[in-house]
Length: 296
Ligand code: NAD
Image (cartoon, rainbow, N blue to C red; front, side, top):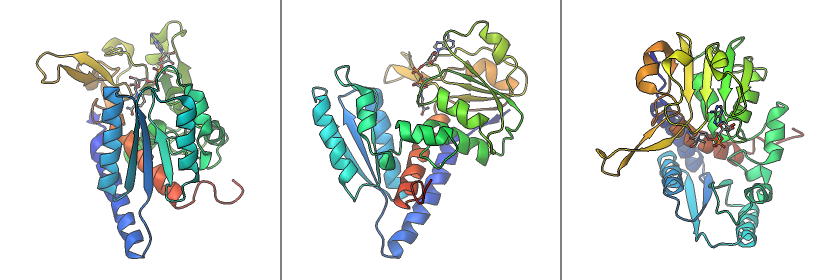
């Protein structure tokens, strides 16, 4: 079994970006600039956004954090987004999800200029991705693809089973894995809450991507020997032995499953850091005007 060290790989990608930024500055240019909008005080969101800001610093990017109280209205938030859309100094920005219930997240996503949508959530980017046109890929699936690529894990002709059909992870990764290319060219099965006899699918997977949000869901008897497992889940479980009273676990029962895999991502330290690195890669692509140059 080999551990897919997302943390180490993300650090490497960030160091590569930092080198590029140094060269840009040396040539008299400016640094890429990522902004993040955070609404409310959800502790997990706070920690994700802090991570993103810290990663910008590591890569030599500029970052701007806009924090708003949970009482902010949808109209006010859309005004902030319009400002970011029109600010030539900002290459890309994200609005951290989830948002308070009185704000319609779809309206917020639709208000973001697709050219600055470095989270890759806007339907324009999603559609371009699905058609194989250049697009900002959603950060988590992009991070997973980068990880498979850098670890030289062959996916062509493999059976990839994806658990979970969210718009930000399960559905887009199922599209990317089935698309022509490497990584890609896999035969994909997408499972979700209405799938019957789930184990029949998980047991046949050569590559299993799990994005459910259910702690320790995947047990050893559900997989075949030698499978590659990408565990996207981030779950807080109570742990009185930790100072903060909880620890993070994935959707896979890592302790009992890992020895049966050829490769597996840990939680934490797997997909999470790769998601942040992917966000920075998208911001650099925006800075370079790569995605929306020319007709496609
Ligand atoms: P979600 O919470 O929106 O949806 C969960 C999905 O799981 C749904 O599509 C549902 O159909 C499916 N599901 C639920 N119960 C099931 C069952 N018993 N059998 C089969 N399918 C079932 O999904 P999400 O937003 O993709 O988040 C999933 C997990 O990934 C969460 O733990 C989240 O915190 C984590 N996440 C991690 C990152 C990262 O960077 N590592 C990024 C995004 C999400």
